[in-house]
Amino acid sequence: MSGRDPRDRSVESRLDRRWLPRGASAGPINCLEKKEIVEITSRITPGLELEDEARQALEWPFLPPRTSRTWTLKALVKQMLRSRGLIVKKLPVDNIEETLRQLFAALDINCVIDAGAHFGEYGQWLREIGYTGRIISFEPVRASYERLRERAKGDASWMTNNVALGRGSASLEINVPNYSVFASFLDPTRYCNEQFGEESTAGNKETVKVVTLDSMFAQCVSGLRAPRVYLKLDTQGYDLEVIGGASASMPSILALQSEVSVKPIYEGMPNWVDAIGLCKSLGYEVTGLYPVNRDNNMSVIEFDCVMRRTDPAN
Image (cartoon, rainbow, N blue to C red; front, side, top):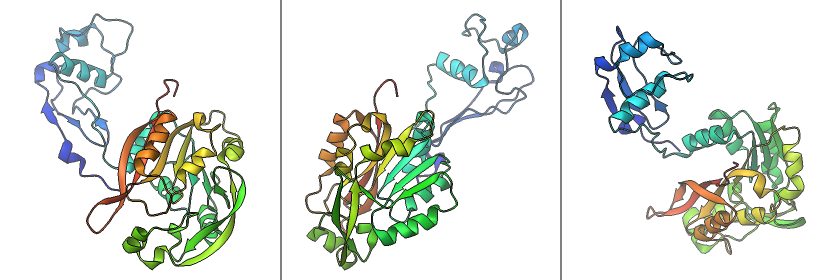
């Protein structure tokens, strides 16, 4: 999940000395992929208030009449560039790590519901990229859950549940292949066996408990004054079943991540167009699509699809 070097997209220019206060040296303005950086090597700092003398020194005829507004350095640079027909914008990111950093910051996410947690790899990864809020993980397979619980032990903000999320409450048989990351309520397709081998198909069955997200949602956000929820789905062809059991909760979920299939590896699972279409009908728009795996012909098998609500209030 690594993106290309941000410097590959850098745009650099220099400020003419006449646009700087007396004694200030010109420096680069960089628009980088990971974040917007406006850096001027000078003796002025962000938060500088422009008094009358400074306004005269800057000699910026395009600066609006002085008001009570405090002009930060970044605002001044943007104003100067805009006067020359240039717009400073954040460039789009092309990896899921940076997308989630920006998305979580923009939406103030403080609770991640992790459906299909397996060994807790996703929760651990969130910690590694800097997320410190609450994580609620759901994993139905007993052996996988034990490893999840061990990984989350010692993290007071990471809670675990040994159940599956689905459309209704029930006890169901789940297929648990030798490579347990492929555990699913659905049977693998022939294509799955061809691409991933017997490790994805051979194994045993286990009866697990299934509950709805609606029945668990209040518990997930309990104690949070203003819950800001992100839903991560990786349930091996069962993601839309989880959403089907979350009709009352979805309006409170600001963004989500679902593993959508271009080439189905389970019988009866929805294709990616239908999966994304359902989420769009619930008020979400795609933020990014990130390949999870490819077949021998380099065709994408699955994407991680990140979406956010389009409600103005969110």
